[in-house]
Length: 170
Picture 1 (tube, helix red, strand yellow):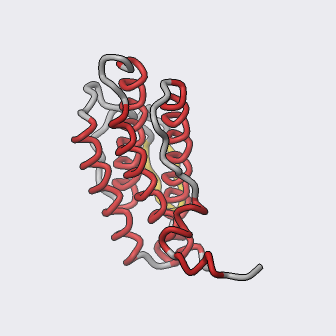
Picture 2 (cartoon, helix red, strand yellow):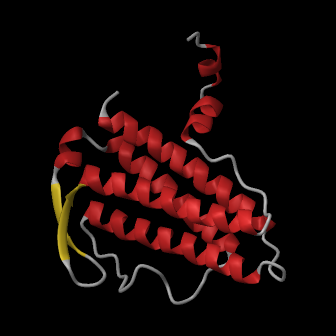
Picture 3 (cartoon, helix red, strand yellow):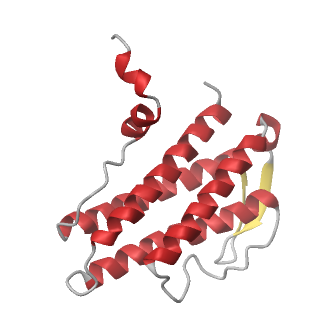
């Protein structure tokens, strides 16, 4: 499997996992789980801001963020819609990406003003791993509040999107 093919699969998984988690976050009761719910929304919003920043880096346009989160916390409904749209953008981006474009280094400035560069492929890997880390944090918050968790694993995603994998002999 090529790295481009793997990235396409990982971003499919990422979109699925984001949707599953954001749907399950509806289980937070705003009154009973107010602090945990707010923390979970802040974490997922942080991921979304970082995803927007890296999408801008990938395309060479300014992102307009001065921090890695917004001052205001979006509603779960608004966040879910915006995350889904950006997940679709990343999947579309990867459809037209080539190994050559992914290997190119892109200089950028972090929100704290530090300079850096990464290849586009490294940026995409960062977006995938960063999101997984924070979905795990949100899952922990949900677990502590006895809110139902999604079954968010790469293996589950692969087998649910390709049921023929269940038929493979060892």
